[in-house]
Image (tube, rainbow over all chains, first blue to last red; front, top):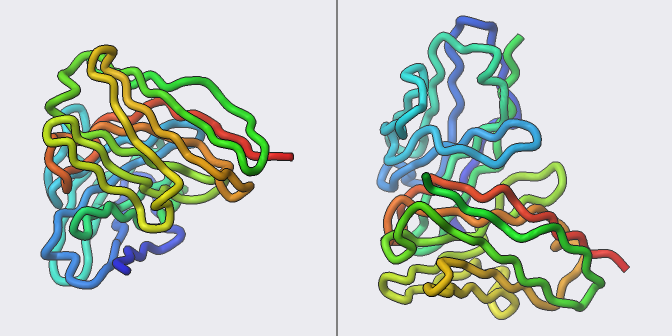
Length: 106
Length: 121
């Protein structure tokens, strides 16, 4: 079955760039989405169709997808960006989520 | 504005069933698919299935086939998810989620507040 793999944790200093990867076989041929989840809250869509930001999502969030990996990049990371991040893609008619990455801003 | 308001927390015994509702507002239910996603305590997100009123299409996660049923009531703009033969492994927060379009394969742009289902004897 199709699986998406993410690193369990990523750390970044405030103001620096954070990159979170999501790998899966031929992921570049599918659309990747990214969701942010803060403790006790429902997830929020931050990137869809690999690179697009929903309205209200800051420009510091960007995405890319090629080959076997998609990447979520947060430029100028802020303390408020500390959260769990999940990638997601569709394998035919089945949605698949990555295991999630805890982003720590320290 | 778009809202997905879910029913309250449930406590069920093993072997029982649970039905969670999701009252939608602020958009046309026919124009967007609905998925259900669950999250066990301290764990990641697990997709459960998809339903589209637009074309009547349903798709369920392989590991839940036969135990889960997703329906909608267009008269009240409400979506439902019923899960049967519950075990402790089904203890989780259940989210209803709106897809950007009615086409399977799109991202999930609005999430309900979540419904905690606890399965315990």
